[in-house]
Length: 443
Image 1 (cartoon, rainbow, N blue to C red):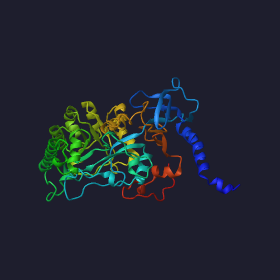
Image 2: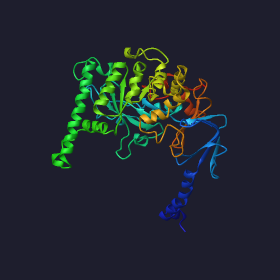
Image 3: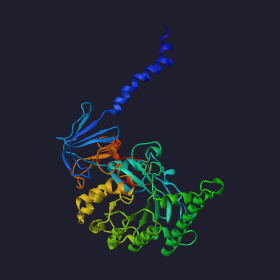
Image 4: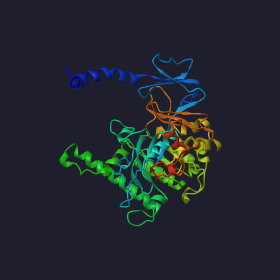
């Protein structure tokens, strides 16, 4: 018998694949149980000596050890003395090395940042080391409309498509629209850019009016291809906004700019998240009454643009007292993603409640991206996105030990190759440097 020929026969290859399938499938189906930790679900009370069970990328059970039955075939991981909480959700970041519109226009709603993101960028590893599992990646704020944002998970991937999180599966919407007002988008004026705040609002208003006119033409065509207007990517994007499918993420700092953003959103009826709101405390009641949530940032050192000079730690507390929905973001590299947990600590120090601080790093951000049905809290049926900490989330001594996304461990501090992203200095922090060099050592 020709053994070499038999070993390379199609029949043997098929037989091998058939036999291997049940083994591989069983491995994927095996539940994993984390035991002994304090679990902070965010949407429920903390659980001491808790159990978290995951399977096929989802949370299948969660609760105290006394009430959760661990499946017989589960892999059990003892995390006694540690803390488990949801993966952090960042509603405003610039990781991934992407870009947006250029100087040819102040309005670029057709531009997609996902077309420029490097999915293998080290910046994602840096975010993982800080516990960030879901992120809204934005174009910059140098335009009135700088382009479409993208919602992604920070997991390892070779393509951006493998990282996408859909906010609207039916219509394939996986991001929002970045808008801005104030100093950034005014630039020096002249040419394509507005030059004044009043002109900024007028340009935005005119473009939305054009979108309404475009929709009227589409509706009048009633499906007749010969009557349809020429395809217009700008208008298509704005119609997604006007139809509520795509959320506007609006950069704004000064209290008058905040109110202008609200005024425009009210006028055209689009959904919006206010971003930064450095002077949000001055109009906290107006923000609360408007119903638009605010994604805010805190800074631990002075500097930056003049219109943000009044930013302080109290904005979160003031928004909470007014009853507004709000969350924190990093605006990475403004705040290093590795330090995102610290934002909640700053808020607590300024009088914000602990519960709101937890929500502001997780579920509140998820709501602002239409993703709260999947991420932002630890609940049955949600994605198995969570982090393991070695202490209280708001202690300066606490470090992220592991970061899990869709039931897979994506970052582990005990792994030297991972640890360097958590402890590295300038080479890791710099958004322009995409490689990690000599980063050995550290705690």
